[in-house]
Image (cartoon, rainbow, N blue to C red; front, side, top):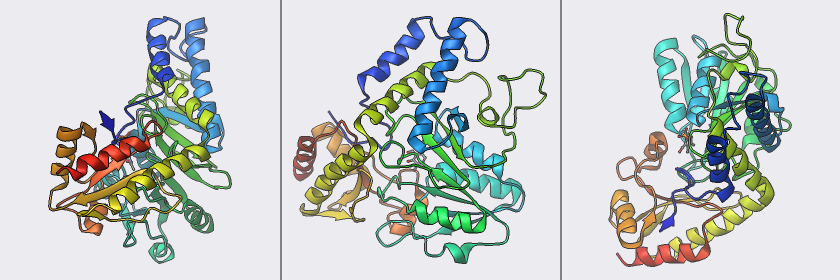
Length: 375
Ligand SMILES: Cc1ncc(COP(=O)(O)O)c(C=O)c1O
């Protein structure tokens, strides 16, 4: 089996991820964090703090500004619902995933927020040039993906950062694809929130993710419940408590801690360069193949994602044939990014997406091309 669907989830994890997860369940050493002063509860509390420290280091922010939750979708929903108020205006882009588009549509319905969309360049990159034109008096937030999950194109976050600084806006970053695959240091950012998911480039288990905050941002309560000071009739209104209600998924978070340590061991710069070399090899091999249509460029820095179509086949057919003939896993259709595909003219056909991880190899790419050639 060749697994080229790492943008959905990294299936192959460093072995220590599963070991840590099982250990948390089997050892009886990990109780509920912040619920007692006995060892098992304290073990969980300190392990979760280690995880916050690793995440803080990864994104260059204070560990106590890291709230843990189930995935990036939950994080984005929490932040959007927490920050936005009736009549606010948001700038986002056509490259966004439904985990941004749908919460914004819902907030349009219930709070009459306004949303403007940055267009894409011909090659599927977010075009930030119209930012100043889209600015309104009521603009509160700029919400952008750090890396497109369809094209692998990286967003110019320093430009977005400067725009937000100039106009006093909050920058909300969807780091689903960028987390662990590119440098996402928030050093020098003013007021920014970065939502990440644990199970993709951070190599943690599914059901992990979080919200990392830089700067002074006021959040309102969205969900509330147990945890922290029991006397307070409301959720504590500071990080991380404001976004952490109920019991966290400790075993999976211990797995995530190992995933992040694995990344740290390799080094982000090296990871992004290695992934670029491998995905460029895939891109160039596809370019040489008759009948392949590529939609984007592949120029460094670029994520390890290559999307294409082949001959007259539908994208589903190509993905199905790759699996049937070569046991190669890819993803077809729209990748939860309908506006991206509409802008690129592939709304009906979609694209076949091959997305790589540090566990993929050049010989797997060769085999992928061989199997494609066979149909
Ligand atoms: C850009 C982007 N945002 C959000 C998500 C949602 O991730 P999750 O399902 O982990 O919440 C994905 C997943 O594919 C993604 O690629």
